[in-house]
Image (cartoon, rainbow, N blue to C red; front, side):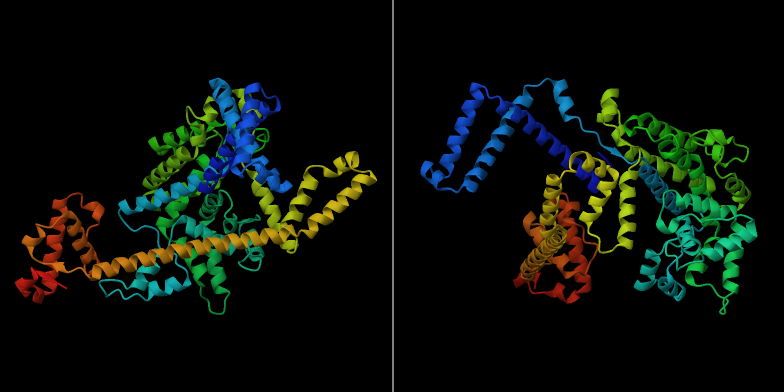
Length: 585
């Protein structure tokens, strides 16, 4: 099984593995039933008698329709098959069991690389919190920028809208590269600069440049975009000014202004340098090994050592970042495949800019540590003692899989393009056409089904299938599944609201005990009730959770503190008459 690393795919693996075990037991049991021994025949006879007895005896059995008796027979045979299969399985040797249970699952290699960049960026962002000086500037969308810029700096505390605008806005290399892609190579041909950008850069640089496709979030595009922006940093700044000055308003829109500001922000440029370095040192060499020329026959199940080497290489760069950062460093010691820089002009540009790039080494090390953690986590299928590690060369050969799930991703891309051109095409027809083309179905038809009898049968079967409207049934099933899921959520919300209402009603009848001596005499259940009552007042958000109050003493201390705070806010309640035993309602 070859998938990406999403959680739903891990769950799917468990389901398929369970299905494989079920099929294995069914096969073992079927062998027993095909050639029954006297013992198996006796079990079968007892199962038949038990089935007849369950429906009410022979008379009741005889009264059943043929379809009903057949359904009971199928259930009986399946149950007996699984029982016999389980017994046969337990009698097998450990090696035979291992062979039957063998189930390989591998994760797409390019998804490992993609997530390693994501992990590195996350670690780099966290590292800024520990470093002196400002981090990357925020590059907010148009609405949030208006809120941020209009914020009243004279106030000690920001408003809720200002806090939200700041929290949802991001900055940094990935954000900057993504916005740059939206200008220079937007996935929508009607948006962005496109040909104007190509012609202008041909004029400025003497070569035709296609900006990395960050707008479509392609693999490695953020590393490539960072390298491209740093290589021609002055040119991109100049081109953005050109875009601004050719307008009547002579002003940037928010998107252009964000990119322009990002390309002048030292912290953002530092992050871009780190991304460019990582692409050169790890991403491009790794991709070349797993999906470059010559990798067509590569078996992902044989790549355990390769992923171990990737992790060792990254650790070596962490231990000695000067290998990357020193202009005198030998590229063969930095790149994973020992080859020269893929984009030497980008590396030269970074070395030139490095005196003005803050915290470059600290950010690089943080990024590499974050990426390494992801490589380790996403290479778990190759762990020592795991299924792949303990399998034989022959077993791995028999279960050959490509290093990347390009075949699946490619079909999805094909489906998207076909549906864009033919929106009324059903999924069933798309699958049929693709299967027909890829499986050489016409050759099979010519060899096996070209006679008139088979052709007549196929036409009749096609009419039957079309008349059943399978595509409509599929869509209705999807709609019903969504409706059921929403109704389930609504039921949970109703149950939750009902429970909250019952709890609120109960707490409304609780009187607060404000006498310290009385509090010290309360049982744990009453202490919990008093704490819940204070929480219901919502006057103190710092009330500790029950799980944080491990014993009776801790609950007493928490309640005494809450009572003291309550009386400070409501001094009149401290004079309540003693007849209420220090209680108020």
